[in-house]
Length: 275
Image (cartoon, rainbow, N blue to C red; front, side):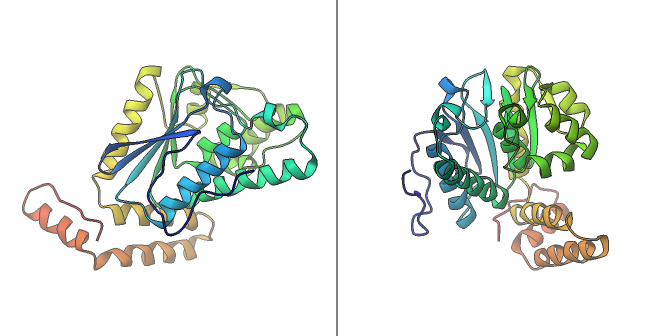
């Protein structure tokens, strides 16, 4: 395995081998999984490169206010772990590789700005877990989802047993995970897993449009909203209310709050600086 790419001294985004990054606007970053020849499956390098990217953005969002995560090709968003690379691995090798994947998922959870999954093809196993780790999901109507791990002798190990029940409920999640059966984008929408379903050619543009809408809002406010929902959701209600108020109070003295109120009274569009 190669050494991690990330260094705290170099927060800029480098060129990667297995993922593509593109500035869609000054404040929106598009990230594409880029191994279409193998259904954009995760290999060790992709895990390392994604971890590196997310850690850079945790350290410094570099002016970005929203991210759209998608994939190249039309067949698959991500098929999960690359079983060809995994074939013949020892237990030690398997565990070490999975630790790379674990760090990548945890880092994605910690990215302070919204991450929208634009799922433009099948999302199986770790691919569905990747989408679940994002803040919300837009999907192509041709997409199929599945957590197939039990069909090859393992189980979801990157948040599937925790994030899926939070999205669709415990009973539905048990059925999905224990059966390993694929399900449609329409069912994913009906069950609350997916926010919107679009024609294949519209998924990315719609996700980018939403990302741009989010990016036009006060960035410090959006960050505090993400933090409050994520952490408050794990607390009992009164503690969560207090956490929300503390997050709110951090915004009162910001320049963006002053700008927002001034713009409202002056009947103009606010210009937020993230300060």
